[in-house]
Amino acid sequence: MNMRILAADIGGTNTKIGICDEQGNMGQFKEYATESHKGGRHVVSRLLDQLAEYDYDYDAIAISTAGQVNAEEGSIVYANENIPNYTGTKLREMIEGRFHKPVKVENDVNAAALGEAAFGAARSFGDFLCLTFGTGIGGAIIINRQIYRGANGVAAEFGHIFTRPLAGMSGGAGRPHYESHASTTALIRKAREADPECVDGKVFFDKISKGNVGLQHILHDWTAEVSLGLASLIHVFNPSAIIVGGGVMEQESLVRLVAEGTKAMVMPSFADVSIVKASLGNKAGLLGAASLFLR
Image (tube, rainbow, N blue to C red; front, top):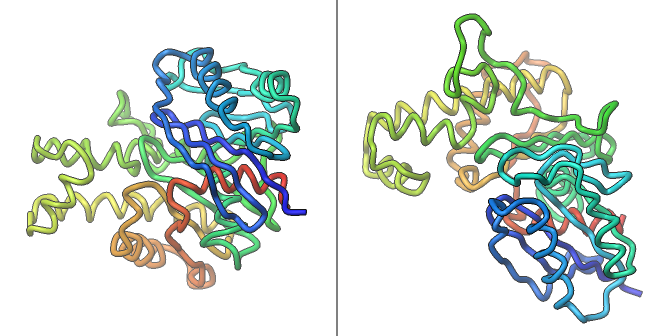
């Protein structure tokens, strides 16, 4: 019998829902605005109502969500201001109470990594890291095709490793954290300082494609920041691969630049690591959450 999982992926901006089978086929897909600014209670209430519209036959419910997750309890350990008052939400308990189906809950980047392992770019790798570059930098550690969670279940906060000295650092742009200098937010912040029209990645890369030399220098410096963090992680974990995702990493040419820069920084004995673009796009979290039941 082919198991069918109703999966949802709760993001700060949009929430996605679909029904996934054991082969990774996605059906009944839909997407709606999370309205995260209205807070955790609203986000969950809206999710429950949206899930209730699926009266198709399915066996279990799997949730990928922003925030730090206690996967054993299915609860939110910590969520930042992107979803106010979401911390402490007992998500699994609330969903099971409504639908009386088995429920599993996973952090969104962990879920994306599991999706890539089961159905995407990481199918041939046993040990790999996954990083997503967006508003911040999310991370996941996969060892022997299992998530490494750490002592408190919240390992892989790669965005908060230090890539700059602490001395003299203060304020948002001056923080020594990796994501303060290598996230997409950091890239666009620098681009807007040089050209106020660069309000997002699309405008930025359009201008670069037309030969804007100043913005090309900014991109070069940013890829060096990305590579610096990746090189540090490679020396710690010695992974077979690093899967990079997030909208900005959809460009193969940018992933090649990052890979070249990273390999120039690592010791020769670490240089055979593969740096690969994530392949599942915005379905990775759904598929990875579903794989929690399928593996």
